Length: 271
Image 1 (cartoon, rainbow, N blue to C red):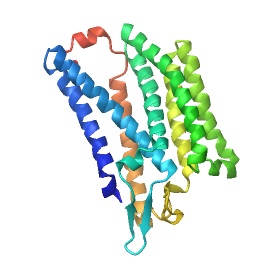
Image 2: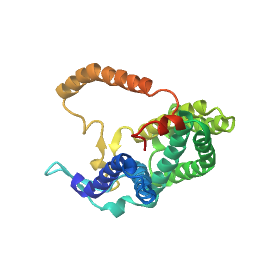
Image 3: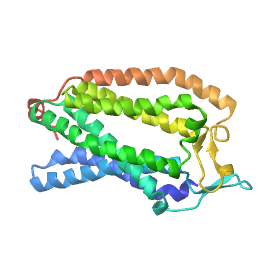
Image 4: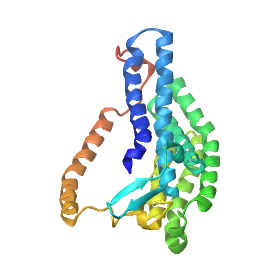
């Protein structure tokens, strides 16, 4: 199955590689053309992963054209990269781009000072309304294009998940307008978290549904590892997940505070 998705995966991987290279090489030469070129590379390589992640999730919500060959126990993907770039997939991609743009602008606003912080906060405020429009379009298009609403209709208590996401998104606007950007960023995090929960709850018990044959759906039951493997991985997770969490807390503590112009100008490795 995945061999037919290599083009999309390689494009995503290449974008992430170029993004890291752009950060590293932008400041290597004191040339306007050099920096402008790497700025463009950084812009494109930051836009593509967000778009492609959204397209991927959109196609998962919609169902991927795949079929289980029960004789060989293999899944065959019946499509190409263009198959994934369908209207619903692209709409979900745009939703992810807008959501990450608002989130990133708020993060830049709370991590910088002066004019840059002001411009980032203004950018988040300007992008909020387009994000809301795209989100409404996504919710409306999801009803005819997917089966995401089935679980919410059969189990109404789950409706609190998308409601929290919607309320959090509205509060992003409220706190951005009041200049309380830390609170706006907090609710932006909450929005992204509950958007993910909403998608997972809508898909359950499917992981990757098939648009061709319901019997070919990948579910939590037919895709899980053996009981022994699950127990082993649970033990590994119990040990290493707290270590990773502690490490991330330590990293964020090291880099706490805002970055000022003086910090950048005084650092010879600044971008």
